[in-house]
Length: 182
Image (tube, rainbow, N blue to C red):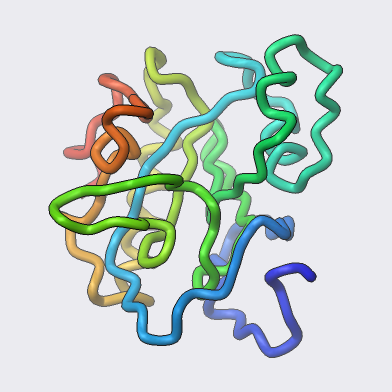
């Protein structure tokens, strides 16, 4: 069963985005307060942009034979709430009231399991690439909209994937500037 259901309210789908449903999500625990945003980056293949491989990956439709690097992804089921292309286009895969599978094993400041209380945003990019002005502009707008929906989100809880999983992850990389979105 997909995460989208007929009772889902439109407020959990971002305005001015394309919604492509991913089944890679769960219900959040009923007492959870969403108060964190996690910034990631992804490109498939690495540093190749403007294709639909990320969309295919998040919707379990990726042809693993399309590129040699995809074989490492075969057993993975992941998603993100949002994917921001280099052009600034936003694609949403999971409604905000659902738990996307983006953070994995995570810990930061005595908190664990960040999928449970965070929104995951993937930027189309690579850890050693520079992000576009369009991405920063759109990300800043998206964060403002998320803060309106979830007033518990504070700037101090806008984190990099590398902050919550430093032994496993280094995204979005050293070229990503949190100062440009706060």
